[in-house]
Image (cartoon, rainbow over all chains, first blue to last red; front, side):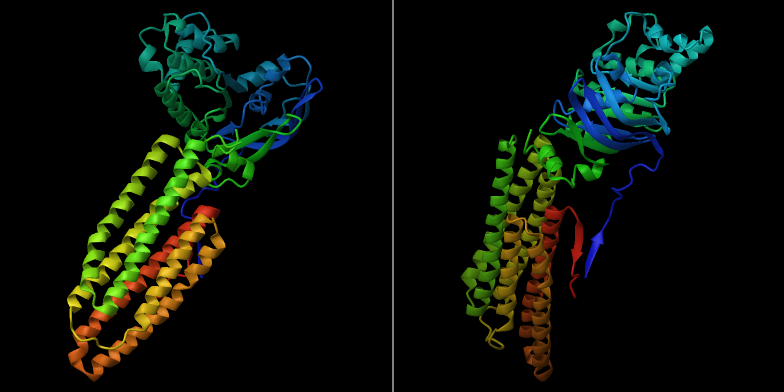
Length: 271
Length: 222
């Protein structure tokens, strides 16, 4: 008699609906195919991590979700990228509105050269909120959500550039939160930060995931393991096109990956 | 291209250490039965002293595993390998304790005349040592199928235990003067039966390491 023990539920870290997805998605830079036939669902109110070796198309993949790749000439996209079931590459999509719904945090903190307050108020102002009281509320709420309020509440008028790297990154997160997005994309958000600032951002991500859908690209496998609910492993094929090798619950992928290539990568047997 | 060579070398070294520990435990079981058969009290005393080395080895391996977890953040099969080793060393140490227990019984028996020639008890020991040896081979060869097979063989040890128990019981019924000696032999048999159960635990751990699945294989009769 063999009894299979499933003591912990590694299968279903997230019960939510699919918030974003790609369907048979390929992306080309001119003649070069950067992504090949990627189909993947991003669950809502959860953290999805994308890992893989350099050059496998992780960042390109992330930038699909708010059409940041549009800014690069010669980019061609095949297949669908959906937000709540709507193809965001349809012609009638308002890209400004899309980027409000799908915010982005970059590798290096990039606060605007203005005050802490103005950094956070910038987005809401652009989207038409002018009332000072209302803006003050949004700024306070966003900074609180980004776990930065207590550190900056007495220096809202000071330049954001005077903050530490970790604080600047949290400010950038607050700036994204201020426009009330649905999805937050993070491209290596901690790679320029020290370990303590990194752990603070990770902790913040965890609390944000209660209300937001987060997709993070990271080189740091341990970070993906610590922070995410779902993990996707990308790698390059012979012609250097990025493919999705394996996608599943993080607890499963890092303890018992299905694909030998995932196993070899995360145990450091190829690099 | 292997990139974590230093880490994987350390992991292989630990694998080697666990085989060494396995040898120590196998030897302890074998010698405990030797000592019982030959009334060799010196040997029994040596097994008791040597058990400390087994315990020390266990803590050494445990410490190395902890260091690897803390410094190398092992993932996937590497992580399962280390967790599996941590579990197996506990089982091995415990089997060592059973051997020590048998040695202590040998000292208790001292030079009392033997109750009967020992046949099934040495067989139990032989089978248990064989299972133990092959379970560690299965670990080294990443062979889950072999591990599952070995675990089922625990039934044979259980059957021998039943036989020993019935036989000694009949001795005691016939002649109550044999009760003390018979009871001591039942303790010995019980220690061996438990040792074989521990081997099935090792087998379950090997299956987990290889497949990532936690399985309880053939729950023992005892």
